[in-house]
Amino acid sequence: MNAEQLPAISVIEPVNSALEKVKSTLFKPFDIGKWFAIGFCAWLAYLGQGGFNFNFKFPFNSPNHYGAPLGQVQSVFSKHFLLITLIGSIALIIGLAIMITLLWLNCRGRFMFIHCIAENSTEIKTPWQRFRKPANSLFLFKLVSGFIAFICLAMCVAMLILMIFLITRNSSNINVFKILAIVCTSLITALVAITAALFFKFTNDFIIPIMYLHFCPCTKAWHHFLQILLSRKGAFTLYILFQIVINMVIGAILMVIVFGTCCCAALFLAIPYIGTVLMLPLLVFKRAYSLCYLRQFGPGFDVFPAPVAVPQPDQPR
Image (cartoon, one colour):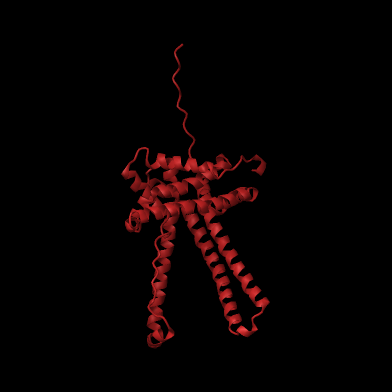
């Protein structure tokens, strides 16, 4: 499809459409059972993402405070090297297994959540079974691409840290060229991180709906998406910028709710699954917005079923 054949793409119009989807899905009529059913699919779709971060600060203010404990740790590590290595390896394997399992469930949940919004449905078993093959394709794609992105980013960060260490080791020899080398390496690292973030953002927002529609592998869905991405780069740039605005608004709403309830709401939002159900209007809006934006590119990108025309009775003459 050529760019000249595409209609005007708007980032504003999908907002109204997404709000209507939120109303029709969650509030017309309001059904608490429906909320918990759709909330379960949304919980799977966002499994392993988000959450609250708690920072712990060690009560040490100078190297003298931790010098002795550090020596004790080194002594224990040297005495029980094999045991500690074995426990660490087992913990690493268990951690990787948990992460892979969460990713697999997350991929299933992505399709289930789209099904709930597109069909205004509370089905769980049907989309779980129906989208098994696309979800498995998405899982393998994310697993491989995530590993590649991690390796590339880790190499860039390691190179940056090593360069800073070698240059600052002898502060008397620092010159403009060394500073430029650090700046260039930092820019490359940031570019890799942004590219990976955009790649997975487009995968979640657009590739999964295309797979949902056509039951195609993830690589083929990316092939279809690249055709419109390359022809309408400006439209998708505006989409990313507007997504930043949407996230800022959602963040502001959450802050108002949390502080307006004296942080009581944060306790409920932190509860797995329950927090997802409480945030369901925001989650449905975000998912519906990307779906409504994508359908502007033509019927082949519209996950919402066409409304069935109701025949009108003949008017008496």
